[in-house]
Length: 403
Image (cartoon, rainbow, N blue to C red; front, side):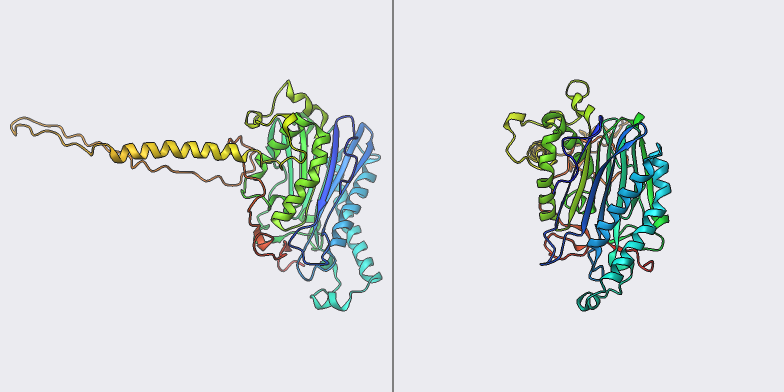
């Protein structure tokens, strides 16, 4: 479902959001993600306050869907109220995070009190504490000031700045092997990470998503190509077309990856001017004209697959010719015999073995320019056992020993 106003917004930004239930969920398991978008009138123009939350899916997080919905509702409302008389979104985010966590805990405790756990919920290992409602949270304010983000747990905040894809929120080394920080931990307030992309950095596209989206891509460096593709799509087809397609793209990711997928996409109106001024760096790889696009466009990253395969095939052919010439060519020749009385100089030449090397591309947060684009969400295996061939729902869990 698309929430927010897809075709209206501030004078500078427009926003659209969607959320899809993962295919790995068993019967009766709800979508444990939540998303909320709100336009707020500020002292110096309207801003967008947006949030996405991902409820934990383990057996004992029996009400994480409620925890996720509560998290986005509390976060958006608290930030919007604080911005009504303030004009410093980065400072507001840091100030309201403790209040967000406190109110979230109050509300989930009230829910546990008003709706006591069922026998089935207790059998799954829940004790009715805040752990049953565990969820991650990403909240951002986007407007004339730029972009300000606060995050606890996993998920992705991507910002296109100066024409390059960036991940401005600092990483957390603890988010490995399916573990994550969470709203349900006592350390939640201290576990939040923050980022600011000022307006001077020319942000023109923002994507906030739960980890189900990124995990549905085959390559770890998926986000570089995705941001470029989204920007290119906006330039060629307009924001309204992107807003129409976003639910379908998330639907495919939820089907392939298996996990719930939710995202908020915000686009600056000036991005459409890039058609004349500064076309996207990957525009030359797009060979499908606007009028030839199908009714349902392929997800970002998928249209480059054929071109990438062709490049790889051509490279393989060239390497094959070189290898053949090497194998069929003359062996190393020896110097002709010389008279013993005359001095000789021996020169040994070393020939390469002709074996090509391929350097792997690791995950990078530097937003470097790349020519190779990640494959779309196809035939992928999610981390932590989510989706793929396992069919299991094993989403991220709070860090051990901190619940």
